[in-house]
Length: 220
Image 1 (cartoon, rainbow, N blue to C red):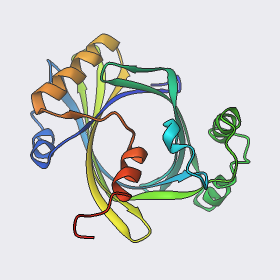
Image 2 (cartoon, rainbow, N blue to C red):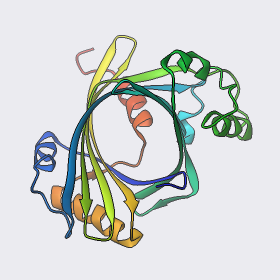
Image 3 (cartoon, rainbow, N blue to C red):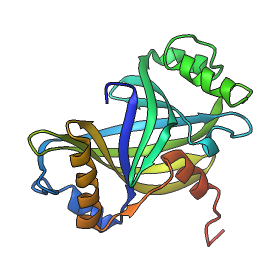
Image 4 (cartoon, rainbow, N blue to C red):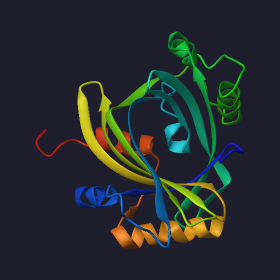
């Protein structure tokens, strides 16, 4: 949304559900696909040395896509969760690739760094940011759905979480409100979950990534 908020529902699919969601003719709760794109990107997430942001649901991300570098900060809003829909603050801006290292000190005043610094001060978090994990081999299939008045962007994500030498493949489905009637959006999310038998994801990507990377393989 254009007011600095991100409103979305997040799900964890199985591989068969991913294939079904990628079909161009799929309709959901009266919504039809209006636009389809596929993107390839690389995300790097940051946290303090004591990993204090992640448990609070805050995310600091550098995204490399199509030759652009985007820095984003996200944090849960007070209104939190509305059923399967989650709401958070989102501030994002494009930066030059050689400025990424400045991000680690969180000292720059302009957006989104100011919001990040304020969040850390409010929660009494200290220390410069450092790399936490990466999302490599990241394929994002996006479908824009509409019922004539409400727009919803559905992202089907296949990625590999990586930290040091550990790599864990993962899949996600995200349904994001892009405008129109909020109640219609909630109905779309419920319909999407039921139609494809999706599992609701209560955590953000970083929390899932950390959990999976720190869980030993059965063969370890």
